[in-house]
Amino acid sequence: MSLALCLALALAVPVAAEQKKTEQKKAGPVTPEDLVLQAEEKVAAGDTDAAAELLRRAVAMGGASGDPGLRLGRLLESRYELDGAIDAYKAAAPKLTGGAKGEALARLAVVQEMRGSAEAAQSADAAVAADPEGAWTKVALSRARARAGNADEALRLAGEAVAKGAGAPAVWARGFANEAKGDLVAAEADYREAHATAQTRVAASIGLARVLRKSGRAAEAEPILAKALEAAPGAVDAYKESARVKIALKRPDEAMGDAATAAALAENDPEALGLAREVSVAKAMAAVAAGQVDDAIRDLTTLRDQSPEFAGARIGLAKAYVAKRQVDAAITELQKAVEIDPASADAWYQLGYAQHILKGNAAAAVAPYDKAVAAEPGNTTYRTNLGAALSAAGQYDRAVAELTKVTATPGYDRADAWIYTGQAQLGAKRYKDALAPLQKATERAPQSDQAWAFLGWAYFGLKDADNFKKAAGKAKALGYKEPTLLQYLQRIEAGEPIK
Image (tube, rainbow, N blue to C red):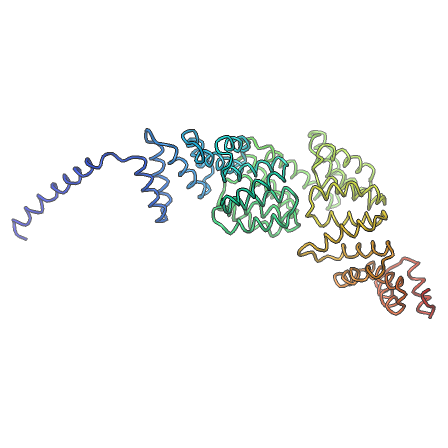
């Protein structure tokens, strides 16, 4: 290389550096808006770490508006960095107005709810004050109203959010409203739809798992929650539901760990703090199943006396008394439980079951079963037992109506509701109408002597001797002992006609 070329290169470096400094001076200092634009480019390139850092710098700059903070909150929320998102939304909201302020406060409410913060409802109300007609405001307010027990208003608000184009978050809120209303089928559909979108996947996972547990499918819920917790380890609601799923799967010792984590993470969330008591009840129920009934009664009595406002202790104690055949003591505890928590579907159901099955008083069971069904309309077990009690109490038309709702439930494949429908039709002397449900019952439960016996009586009422002998004979072969049917079977097999 020649000496002239080397000299030229050496001189060019400081000249280029000086030129860059001059251009920067002309461009002026970096503004929050510049950093926001750079952050958008980083997000588009998939570098959310760099984007978050740029937005933090923008938020920290003097004179910055609330926009960088709102954007930072959205980004951190999408990454399930819940505490960071809460801080960002709180900092941004006072600097914003109108729709942007409403969105920041509404998103804050949603994240606080997932985080287990008692401030969520207050943030939702603040969003209403800032932007009453905003889509995000309606999402947050729908959630708050559902939690407060106003399912109809929650469903209306979620529908308005959907109409305003809020997308997956609105569908997720609608799922929660449907769940609060007791429509588990609709809630599951909404949660599955919201689960398909990354924006709401974790939140929808928690709702979907809860509905699966309530529908008796806790085993399906467990892996869904595991993925949700992997993505969002700060989601208190996920730990709470994981504890309840493990209780449903009869693993109370494992549930205790999730309950403890939820209580540690939550910010004064009474539900999280109360989970330990639910686990204690589950442990006592495990003791009952293991034959240690006296130990369970002792532990549950202690828990009841320590927390007299906790209906769960009384429900558990009642179940332990039932195992001990102390039915009156169980009913006393259940009556107190429904006074303490009149919204408890389980308490009402157990009270109805005690009256219906254990005391043999179907008429007394109808009212508590009604309450259980009103609290959880999608629970097919509750509605089936209500239909059975109505039939036994002679309310045949209403029994058929309730049981038809059960048999029409998508996925219902048990024989019970079909058997009780047939029984109700027999009670009303509608023998032809009894045939179809009882035939379905024998298809689903071919070893049920009761189903075959009822089918036999339907044929008897129709004076169909051949089919009566087949159905009643099957019932007898399966061990059916009721003497009236067996006597008629013997006489008709001997050639006596049905009169």
